[in-house]
Structure formats: structure tokens, C-alpha cells
Image 1 (cartoon, chains in turn red, green):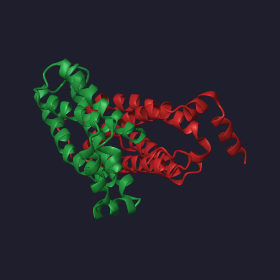
Image 2: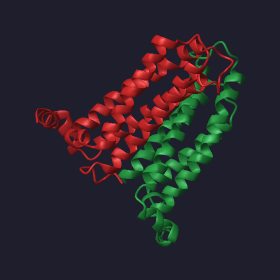
Image 3: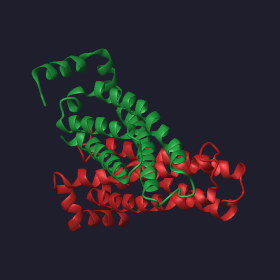
Image 4: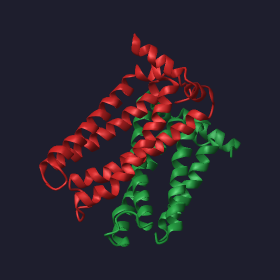
Length: 162
Length: 147
């Protein structure tokens, strides 16, 4: 399959090989990935809880997102780059891991949920739509963390992870 | 730090029925780790928001005590969750954790972070130290698996 060949050639790149063969590079990149994920999920949860009406109700959604979402995006950028590096080190196995695939489905759904909220609901109309968007986002991000952790336990080529 | 008494305790703990049950059920450790990471996410975002508020970058329209009241309880309430899930991981794999120098470092950082959280959150130095300690805790947490 063409995609598999592409995955193999990604594994053969210099940085992927370096991460795979070094004893400490993978854990360092992984630590950065986990740190970034905690900041992404934690900051999104602040927004989601506001959308659901559970916390920070004294502030408008627009104000809150203006404060919080820039942090989320920076952390997301770090998580994406570190995640891509981890992926490259073992691209074939990750791409064929069902938890990893499920994680990406959830990421896409979280992105769609966010787009639908911005395009069709917006930050100004408090109500059912806003609460559903917040709940969906929180649920999806919990799934993303769950699938991410299970990926580490089910990927064969990293016996170090246990 | 690794003493004969600690090794003996780990061996004993490993053979208890509870530890055996956790080891036997493969889903327990990843599930508990997931909850552990989610609780850490709540702590990290709260510490970050407090630090950024002190630096005058976010939540500037609200007085500091109010922001403090919004986020400090999140840190406190996450701690029992982290403790409970952490204990399950320790019981499941005692030697991997208790006798591990990285785990011991993590616990030292955790005690420091709790002390810092008890201090009045009034200056930037405390904000920076607190953030640095929690980042250290996250890093040490991941490195336990590799030592």
C-alpha cells in the first residue's frame, strides 16, 4: 500500500531514526507532549465549564476565551509538533494502532465541534447550544487523553512503556 | 534512595492479593493513569492561569483574590484524585515506583509544590516557582516509566 510506504519512509528520516535509537530522546519528547496536553486539556476545560454554565459565570464567554484560548493554541502547537516527532519514530505501528486512530477521529470531531460552535452558535448566545458544545468538547478531549494513554500501552515496538 | 527495608516492603506489597489483581487486570493501570493525567491537566491549567494573572496577562478585569478563589480549589480538589490514582499505580507496581529515584524526586517536588500553593499567591516569584515545580512533577512523572 502506498500509505504504508510513506509511513516507512517517514520512519527512515534522520530525526525519526534519532528518536527511535536514542535512549533518552523519546522520553524527553514524550514529557513535552504530556506537559503540552495537560495545558491544552486543562485550559479547554476552563472554557467548556463556562460554556456549560458550571464555572466562571461572572465573566462573559467572549472575555474568557480571549484570555484562555491563546494559551490553548500555543500548547496545542507544542503538542502537535512533539506528537508528530513521536509518531515519526514509529509511524507504521502508530498509524495501524486502533487507539491512535480513535484519538485522531476524536481530534477531528473536537475541531468540527469548535467550528460549528463558532460558525453557528457563537459566544454571545447563552443557551442550550452553548452547553451542548461545551459538554461535547470536554467529552471529546477526555477521549483524546484516554486513547493517547492506551496507545502507549498497546504499541508493540516500545517495550519500555509499561 | 534504596534500602533493604524498602525493597522488602515492595516485594511484600507486590504479593498482596490487591496488587496481584491490579497486575492481572491489564486495563487498570492505563485507566488509572488516564484519570491521573486529567487531574494533572486541571492543576496545570489552574497554576498557569494564576501565574499569568499575576504577570498581568490574563483575567486583568478581575481582582486577584477572585481569580485566586476560582482556581486554587481546583488545585486542592485535584490532589486527592492524584493521590488515589497514584496509590493504585504504586500498589500495582511497587518496585517501579517507590524504589525509583525519579519517583522519589517527584514526591519531593510535590511536597514543595504543595507548600508553595499554601503561600499567599502575591508575587511573580511564587508564580514562577510554582509553575516550575509542577512542570518538574509532570516530567518526573513520565520519566518514572524509563528508570
